[in-house]
Length: 503
Image 1 (cartoon, rainbow, N blue to C red):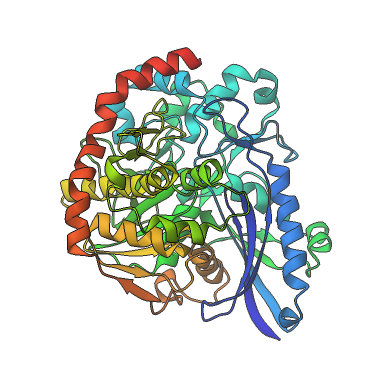
Image 2: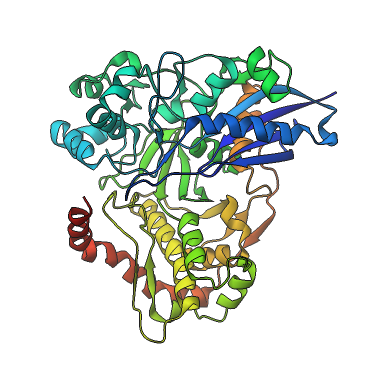
């Protein structure tokens, strides 16, 4: 039998199950989808029980392949979306749908936290600004608005912690990467910020124990194994948040290296030996899978989800292939004939951290058509990523080169625009849709002693290719980038006014 590592990646749209060999290469993968509910503007929630159903279905699909009959799973790795509020009772039953990373309903609670404790204190204490997209305000919203659910809650978890419970039966654990991006964790002390938690009158006992992603988090129970069609007793790692797993899976080595993960949302991240505090409080810090190094990260809230929205809205036929559409968009010159798109469809994180921000097209005329608007959406997401990358230079952490990963980079058209807008060389990850799972596989392998450390685990290996920016197009995009970066500040009063009308 050949040893392998099984990884579950809980994404925004599906659970992906993937098997890796011990050289770090993905052997096979399968996914099972589930919906995100948007019951009100700014709300985004998922049913955690569907994570488990999707994991079971995708595992059975995966191991139905005859090619995997000779693979013996040595360990299970876990990763999933971060910043959530997944509340469960003492038996592990969800008391309310998970408020996922995109949810921004807790604006009142976020403002209360800032008013009570002060933005400067909060940023120094947690190395992150308090914002509706983080877990802490969502927990307060649950306390304020769902009293019965809050009373029944025994633990505040994130997505991969719930799935670990379903696999092992063990509750009340999380890892440093997820904990450090809740808004309630002190990165310097490597422990929950009890000062914040006590000031908000939240029960200490509902915050889970925290460990390193490379620790073992239990073993596969008989009940779970029977449903999955796997042997019981397989070790399950503690696992890590998708951002931390992506960093290790990206293969970046530090220094001026960084990566862009291009999915429903998009983020830019690089490693640092310690948290880096930004005077403008624009950048996030969260722990690496080793629980010591830090990811210094900026997030664009809507990337792939904005492109998907625009394609669904503007293409002529539902069956029309996006690749053909993108070929047509090549006829539109850089700058989309003077139309700029702001992709803040679910509020914005870096650099503005404003749940009231909304998307918009500016520069429309009677000559604007669906191709103009669609290209502007692709370009707008690239302008947003460029705005994030410029922050690193402001902080004396300039980025020299980037690795591209995530499902969005399968679009050659989109990644070319991103490269030309940002104006820096970019390597293409050899397994772009498996980089997050690869990081989780690395952590799982270390947890059971397959490799002595993350640094010694096999990473991404040789990159698939490299993009070199076209200087003429970079120069052509520059004035549009500058205008893009003015848009939010000029439009903020409008966004605030619309928010009052919505709520």
